[in-house]
Length: 194
Image 1 (cartoon, helix red, strand yellow):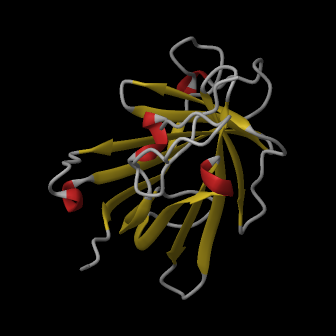
Image 2: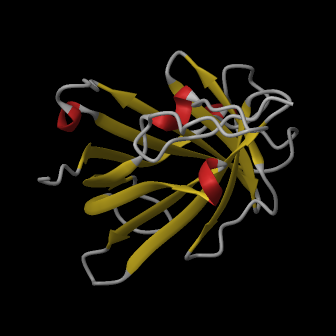
């Protein structure tokens, strides 16, 4: 069994007997603290707005997981936070994501992520619909780490039955409602002097 391990700074951990070292490209570049903004689309959760936000990705469990902690503060002082745990499927080298947030959003189990063309993507069932998350890291430069931009887009698709189709919101296959924008977070890496 080949086990992938994630270094705290994105670098591989030193090999240990019985535990081969390595990085999954979908997670290695995310490690660290990030600050920016989140744009929320108008909906039942409130009007369209932009809020200050932060997210951190930290190595956990000896490198076998990455913990994600997101938080934003609303104009009225209330806040939203979400926490995820990314782990690796050693048999398929896929990423699993466990997630919970401050409004009770949980998938009840892990969701399998895909990694294609530099985008970490996951679709997960939530209540009466689905969420789709797309996480992209662009502009990263080894010599200028603050040049990296992390974008996390969250989209929603409401309605659980394929037969319940409103043609005006149907997806390209005409059978399911299309995903609609919910949150778009754009972050820059927090660089500390040191």
